[in-house]
Image (cartoon, rainbow, N blue to C red; front, side, top):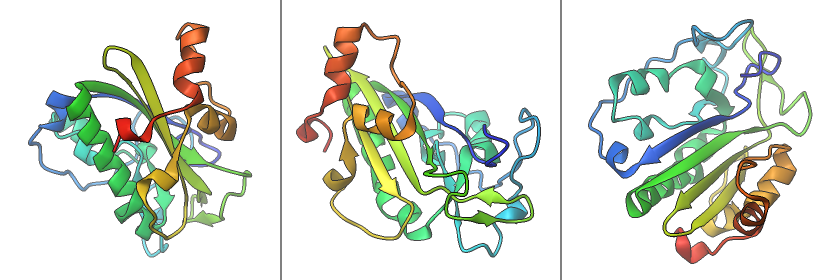
Length: 202
């Protein structure tokens, strides 16, 4: 968590096919994260701001556990997100992730906001929560061979085909400055992160 930006730096988790089949009901109560030290966002920062409380790890991925569901509503897992993006393209990408977790058995997911400057797109609320310029998501699966893909969405309204938002993991690393899967052997990491086949994910 980045207390200066009042946003998560990143969120990472494993998602399995069994977890996708969970039945826990949506919590819908956004609360501060008790483990965050220093200033963080509060729910009032988002009210009447014109921006959605956009989950990084979506609640629909956490239906396997009441605790996981409740904790997905910690504001350490939330960023100001354009409403059209949140309920449109971003939701479709989240659904694609769940579909592929079911298809491949399990996957690793890393997702987060992108700030092109410390000012982002401005701030909301008394705690001056910085609005991200964009969002990313990268996924990695092992299905008899590792493969991965990334997604990048500007924090604006709009809807294009999902393939338009797909990127190599290398491209997302260049944008974010994060080395996502650095523990992989170098040759394998290079192969997995340098490109993708869209047909493997759609």
